[in-house]
Image (tube, rainbow, N blue to C red; front, top):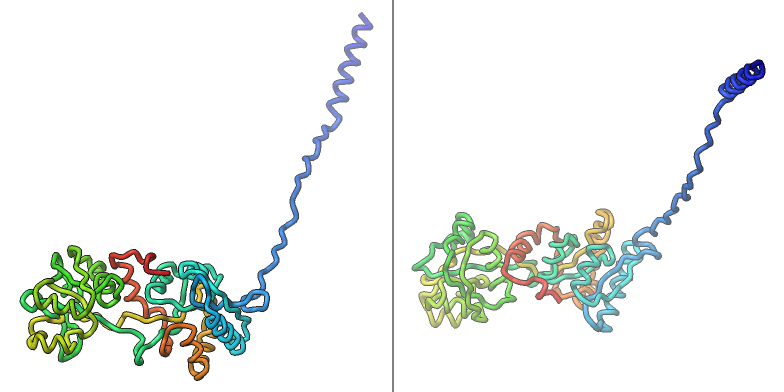
Length: 330
């Protein structure tokens, strides 16, 4: 019995001592943190390691003359700006537009169709517009039978009166004659304006020339049509139809919004770099040798500085025209 008591006391003592021993929590397992990635900053744009790229006219096989002119222009711009500039040869216009959008090309020229797609993709900023006979753009006109339509154009003032939506609404459901499917003044812009103002018309007839459109309206083959300003003055038409201007009215005149080719800069460039390049291009244009070089490289008799708003109405109506714009870009 005494032995049992001793064992009990011993067990209680052992338990009490164990309760006094502090419990040690094992440390958490170490976690692995990879070293921070060291990013090497891209070389400054316009430097020898990251040059600005001047695009030659797109072609499957680049002409040696274009290459020489492009290299000469790049060298001249490099001297004027201090940026390192290299001439490159894109294969297609679609490829070039994408390169301008992503900053893989920086200076290029585009036709009216191509510049519309470039603006649609927010790829470019305007720099210079090509001019012909001193004008950077031209207009068009809607003509219609005097017996059916009211004119919203005042020939004395030389301007439209009233609102375009009201004037063009007269054409709803009427028969149209156009020149050809690729003509900006004889089809694309006028049809785009009708699309923009949601004036629904049936499919029209393509009669190939502006004079044929005037004749078709005069002879009631079509109700209305579109031509350049003013196709009614063509001598053969005036001789054949002395009362032509009384019989065929200008219903609405489209202002000079149709551009020729233009020089553009990539929208990825900084405002400061764009300003410097525009200044350098103007110096090139102002020099006889530089102007000749630009004319040889890109289509244009002369060049005039423009801003992006110069192209707003044209691109708006072209994008509203019933065409596959991509098929018109090469």
